[in-house]
Amino acid sequence: MKIYSVYDEEFKNYGTVLEGYDTKSLLEAMKTIPMPDSGTKYEASIDVLEKEPVFKVLKEKAYGDMPVEFGMCWGYNTKLNCLEYHRDSEVNIGTEDFVLLLAKREEIKDGKLDTSKVKAFKAPAGAVVEVYATALHYAPCHLDAAKGFRVAVVLPLGTNTDYRIADPVNEEDKLLWARNKWLLAHPDSAEAKDGAYVGLTGENIDIAE
Image 1 (tube, rainbow, N blue to C red):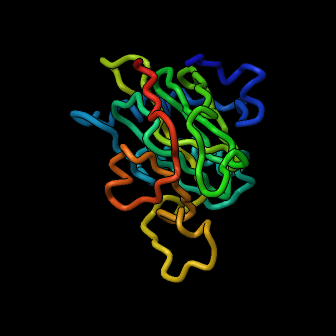
Image 2: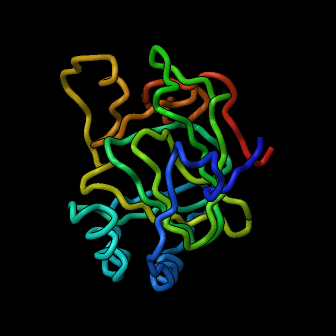
């Protein structure tokens, strides 16, 4: 599939690049966190990242002083597997160039999304990339299998932490997989096997192919 840049016109419906933030110290702090042997890891809040000066600046500026968490997704991945959305924008910052696989929330039809709608966008290391709340996204993809990826994730406080709805009132509630996290899984994914809502149809995209 074609891989666009987050600076291309095509990205404007999915997000934007936030300028003016100094991420150098943050990137060094991220690199101190060991890579997993395989697969990916995610932690919603990581103390060493939240001590970085840019965390306070992003909280005050990018999120208008809302309570936020500074975590990270890191490891090795080239597949789509799932798509999720939140009620708020997400900010991503990578130590290496990485790829985001994105779709639009309005492209969900009757609780399903055809993966042919998904587009790929390359983000350069150090860029502060805002992914809009209306953009479906999931784990980043690496471009160098030897390095993998480390991507800082800024979200409203509590997002992606444990939560399951007990009394669904509508169809969207079936997608609620964690706090402020609505998830559509591909049938081939580990999340689907764990009971996540299967909402992706078509190919489970693998950018390695």
